[in-house]
Every structure is written in structure tokens, then in C-alpha cells.
Image 1 (spheres, rainbow, N blue to C red):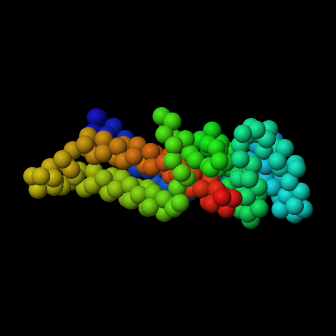
Image 2: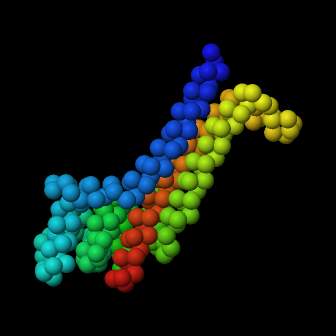
Image 3: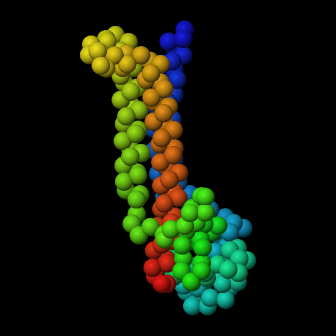
Length: 204
């Protein structure tokens, strides 16, 4: 009975890992667009003002809204730079998410946890981190398949004897799932900072 529970947990872990890939892809490509369509959301309001600014060049409405949402000390040039781009919503969403991390004191810097400050990143780490997510998913699927293999067969190599234990395979699967979650959070954080850095280089 315990072995059956272990295998159920293993297959649940495989399903979670596959869903993580979908969830990360969805968050990267569609989540901000959905938030933009909500008229009363901050991103929806900013997007409408950005469209008006791009169409007419009139910035007063956008700057007033930026002042209310971000505060008087925020560097409004970042918002104007974001609004002038065809894909303005993703830049505005990044500014909204990380506004408490942005330090504007003559130059734009990023305040990380523990008050550590750096310049915004100049390169996008998303391709590398997304590749790690996909690799992790394949690793989980491999461990899941290995658990099925070891029902009927045993891995004969002494140094790989751990592969014959469903307990170890289950723990490894959930460890990889936790790692993937951490990578996805890091990807969202660093990609937002990269977008902010792109805006900063435009206005700098």
C-alpha cells in the first residue's frame, strides 16, 4: 500500500512539473495582457493613458496617473519611455511590479533584498532560465519513467542503486519541482529588471 502511495506521488509530481512549464509560459505571454484588459486595474489605466500618449503626444494624463500610482519621487521618464513603445504594457507591468525596487537618485538603480543595490541588468537571462525549466521537466519525467522501469527491473550498477528506491525518486522529483519554482520566480524578477534597464538606457 505504501508503494502504491509512493507511485501516486511520483506521477502527481510529473503532472505538476508539466503544469509548471505551461504555467510559466502562460505567465510570460498572456498574464499581463489579461491584466491590461481590466479597466479598473492599474495596468489597464496606464495602458489606456499610454495609448493616448502614443497617439496624441499629450503626456499630462499619463504623468498625473504615474504620480498617483508610483509617487512623486519616481522617475517619470521611465513611464514615458515605456508608453512610447509598441509593447508598452509589458514595460509598464514591470514598472508596476518592481516600483518599490527602483531607486531614482540621479540614475536608476535597483534595490534588492537586504538593501543591496545594483544597476539594472543589461542582458536578458530568460532564454537560459527557461531552458533550465525545460531541462528540469525532462529530468522529472525521466525519474517518473525510471520508477516504472524499476517495478520489473533493478538497476544493477552498485553506484546507481539509489535509482531502485521509489522513496528517493519521489524526493528527487519534488526537489526538482521546488527548484523549478525558484527558477520561475527568479526569471520573473530578473526579466522585469532587464526591461526596466532597457528603459533606463533609453532615457539615460
